[in-house]
Image (cartoon, rainbow, N blue to C red; front, side, top):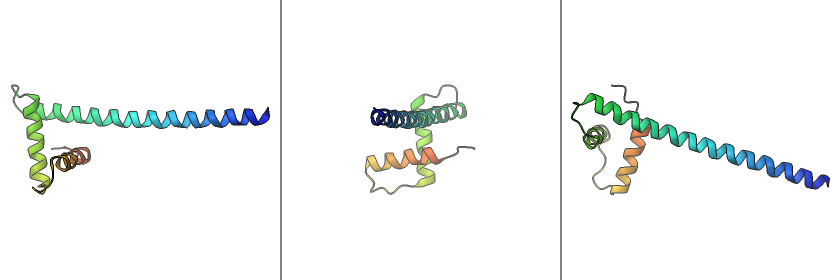
Length: 94
């Protein structure tokens, strides 16, 4: 009976750690989404009131192209990943 109690305690501990990791990943994903939304809102504020979301995204992508100057031989997926990493690592304190 004592072995069963130890087994249950270990399973409980592993389950707790698993849910802590899942919660941590969800929190960091939420932070990235919130940062992207605030970045787009900042771009909209910088531009005129009649600006659409697509125009703000285009301005942001042009800033990326001017700063990073990616190689033209990159595929669309590679360029997209490079843009995502640039966006995640930029401070945008202009």
